[in-house]
Figure 1 (cartoon, rainbow, N blue to C red):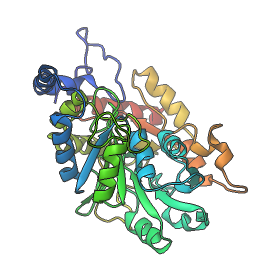
Figure 2: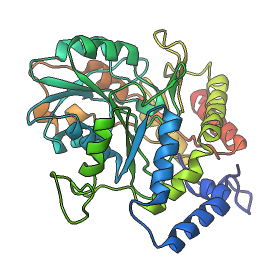
Figure 3: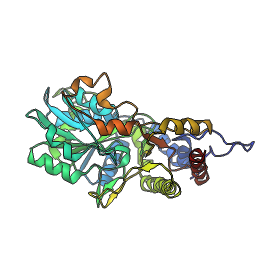
Figure 4: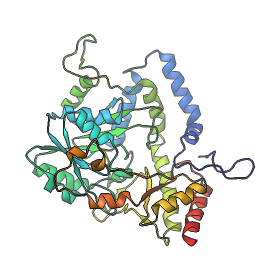
Length: 386
């Protein structure tokens, strides 16, 4: 897998992006172009064969019986909640250390987000603190597999079972991640993925998927995503929306799905180099092998390190070296004006707030040249040696 951004013709290093989408297209261009040609030549662009084949392939890959393509990961979460019977005001417990689509989808579906603090070594929702958030209005738990690291699904599903709650996995960042033999997205009653371009399995626009092994959910979702229609294309039998993964995106994603495991392995290879060569630096690595998840596998969607007390200085220094980094997330969900009204009285998020001031994402994607990884490591070590 080649990367076009390592060296320019005048032997000066060009800007190193945290995530560059162009090399992947160049690597797969022949197959992607053929897939696009096939779709455009078919004259069928919505709810046709490419989507059906991709749904079958992705369901098999994750380990669920059914998959339904929708317009975005946000729609996937909202429709999953709707098909599961959410009612206005029903509470959905989720992580505050997550992207905005998660609470946006809960509100779209008519629910109320309830935010939970996270573990200090993983940035994942702390399963031990979920129970104290449960009230008579709680109906759902929505764990977010952040940065590709799966949540403690055994504890979460056991807790949900005791309190008769449904689990809907937000697996938007976890394509190919797993716990033991089970893929992320196969633990909950429903699970949701995003195919936003920067995801490990990303399209060339928005897209999402809902997975389930419940046939009745599958049948209802077929209607919900398509204006509530069933057999008659001119009659809506229930109140649905227009949320369909189009044939162009499905065809591209079918191509990329064949390479997903290989691309995740390439991410892991680069992450391992970072960890080995920066092991003795002041950087703190997230725990991708927590004790309660001995057999966990992360897809390294985002390679986040913790920088206690020097994050902004390191970021500025790397930027001067033409190395892009990102902060995930500079503003937590409970801090945002849109979601602050849903924070309970006297509720605190000390761990999440500490982590958000330390987290820094280094460049990592499958096509990133190894010599570029070594250059980034060199500059990080250079920063600490000043």
